[in-house]
Image 1 (spheres, rainbow, N blue to C red):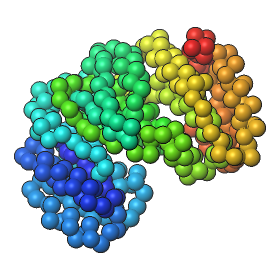
Image 2 (tube, rainbow, N blue to C red; image 1 turned 120 degrees about the horizontal axis):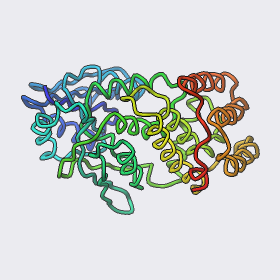
Image 3 (tube, rainbow, N blue to C red; image 1 turned 120 degrees about the vertical axis):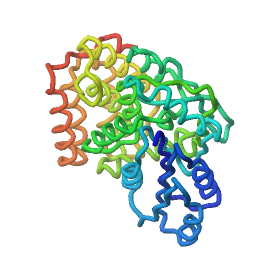
Image 4 (cartoon, one colour; image 1 turned 60 degrees about the horizontal axis):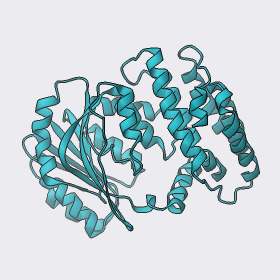
Length: 358
């Protein structure tokens, strides 16, 4: 089986059901489709079995967390590559039909992490095109440059991805002590460090941006993640700093992707942190009337002026000192994980000053 289409679903309106029906229509000799519904909705449970057919499996599950719904769906996949879709988005039929032949062509090349294409992003203000450049480069840094150069939402996850790699990356991400909303970007970073992407010259996927369109609603969603992790909303002020820190440590030290020379790892880590630090410096992040606003504002100002001189261990200390004001247990688990990651290799020097001053 070349390709598994995975659709973990919760929504139960007519639009969601129509997306599920479309996904089921893609099943064939080279494509299996797996639908796992955790909505608990009686009418939807009655409807979905009618979509089942050869190479199309419908699983009716009890209500559970989205992460469990996804992981259980992925566990059933048999395809060499998997393509994950959401029940509020839409895949393009001709692109999906073309994927098995493309996988036949490039699947034996172990340097290929996935197959991607062109994305349409739908928002209330209008539609936009995302067309990642440079992802087919043999150079990992060039791939990250192409990915980070797109200013729209992170749509790369909706690609046909090598299943072995996806399982490996998600197994690692499940070990992280706290789950944050920016981890989708860390995940795609790890995909790109694992290998290059073959480009399909077609519209591949339509992504409905939903609550992520506006800064106010997207930050509210970000804070939901922080609250679920046991942290105060004030941590939202450090959102992009955290993304820069975690991603850079993994680039420099992780073995979740093929090994690179230390100098190459450092150059890629500098790139990642530089982009995230620019966001940290340039985007206004709310603290939602947190009683810790004063403390996080002081830390924000300190990080803006001293990051060029801070080692990663110093950054971790600053982050955990703030977290400890909300929860000592959460701060300790965060410190233990990332300290261990930092010490897997030789001590990491401060990032290049240019990264902090960008």
